[in-house]
Length: 61
Image (cartoon, rainbow, N blue to C red):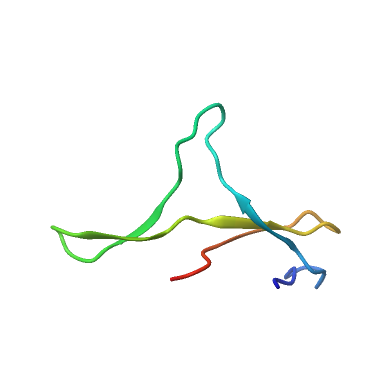
């Protein structure tokens, strides 16, 4: 359960980011060294139903 940082309302979770008109995903990764780039995960979105604040988060790091 995520709380809005502005109004402390419970946020609606598990929305995702999409590129308009396609199915490309946005992926968060961390460059460990020059040869290996480690995938961290896909970002998710939570939206506050009261004020519209958007929170971007990763479920499992």
